[in-house]
Image (tube, rainbow, N blue to C red; front, side, top):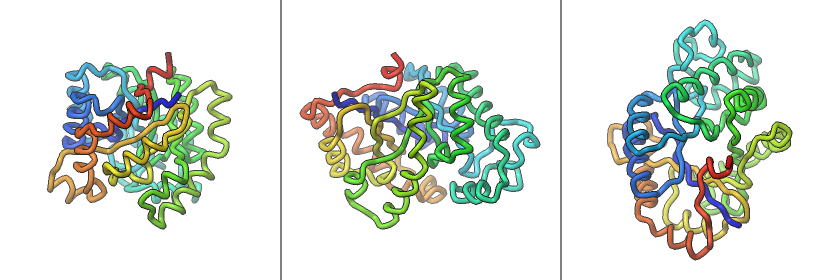
Length: 284
């Protein structure tokens, strides 16, 4: 059977994203979401989710984005910082730290544990783990994530590897290099998850079309959906000139929101006999 999870990432990052996710929940345009414990608008996100009667949520772990860590004592996680009190800007910066042997694995564990605790202390049950810029795929990071999934009784971790036929839709040359890099990192990850009795998705959508999911792309994704559980990660945000100016990556996020709210895709879901599910459905 074809099963599909539609998950909104980056909840708590900004008011524009929080408002978009609220609209998506109201219109049943998503089946789940992942919250950033380090997001600048985490508290507002928690209130919004509770107003929508959402008590089960994913943890969108992060070590990048220039965000403030969840760990109060910065001396405990000094190797994860940019020289000040925040994380480095992007995954490439974090990758350089890792490659240079400048990241202490135990500090990753401490910070992620505090991020997960911040979410549960806010009244939520964590159903799944994913991460900002997919940084949990780095082996040293993945080690901490598996240990913490067991500690917090979290039964699902995202594996963000897409099929090439999807990547090739509206293809960009940079996508090929990213595709090969993700493949290399996840060769052994699924086996490790299976050994630790942690569930994961059979297929994934949304990485290579992040910020550019339009009606044509979404329709193609749904029509070519395979059997098993597929997770589609979306990044909607309401239109805001100031938000886009500060974070250009989200320039098409309002278009992605409109595609989700338009609802044309639901007809394809019906015609293709796709079952919409949540992460908690997998746990049960």
